[in-house]
View 1 (cartoon, one colour):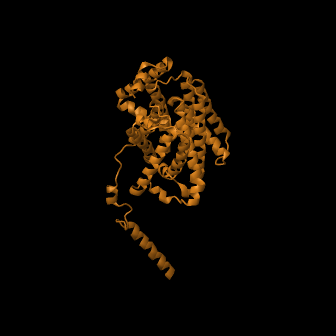
View 2 (cartoon, rainbow, N blue to C red):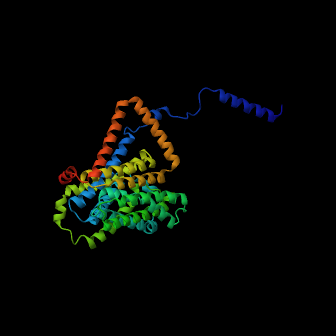
View 3 (cartoon, rainbow, N blue to C red):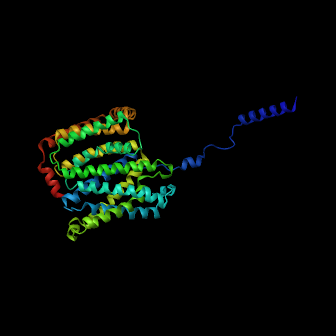
Length: 394
């Protein structure tokens, strides 16, 4: 036997011995580490409820301060929110790990001036216009108009070369536009000034989101919402402060602040900041899909809340148009395949729920039907004494 044959035979013997060994040389899993791995005790539903509650609370809180309490200075209110957010993000960066994602962002002075500052300017303009709208329009109608935001973002992305035009996508977004047009035609308290402010806010927001998308196309600038706020809040606060000093500060008095109350201002700023924190946790614990669907649910709840708190009249044409816009928006964001799989999964879970808790499922169905009937009666009858009393109590 040659030396080469001896080496081959020896090698095969070693492999057979190795494969027949019962104990592995290196364990693939550490049993102790596997047992001690911490598991989150907070269910995903808690993050969903927290985000919907905070997002709705910020909108209703701002409307209440600006309209019900007659604090007619939306730029000052927005400036306060941004100053509050700037201080809080700086504290979180220093004393917690929530904004450690900023360490992976290659931020330089040149990048900050050329990318962050322009985005911050559009962010500030969208916030100013968005809050000015609350002085003229109802929360329900504002939420209906906001359904056109995906349309504006799409057109802005085409105009700035971020994405390529598509006839199929264009026809899809036209469904959203058609629905919002119907909702606008059915609006009883239509104010052109408020409509133009909201339109400007949507356009500025679309420009901001498109610029952010272009910035984040590089792997060096992946940022979650809280890290984005860390960079954008100081720019927005500075710009808003300049606008407020020129426009609203000369007209505001201490009586206006005292009428709202400093405790309410603190709670309002804290609520607005916690909203940004909740977005980070919601996306981290669930997905962007869940965030999109939660946004649609939140919009519907806000329309109902506006009807109950301020007695906002909503016509049947508005409901019909807003329903078309919402369906178009969900289809635009998720696509047919995602929707099909999600509907199938929801149907399976609903069937399991009915098999395990039939009485509770009947109660849910009955409650939904009663709620829809009450909303239709409220829509047909306009303002009632109950909403007026609730608004007066607030």
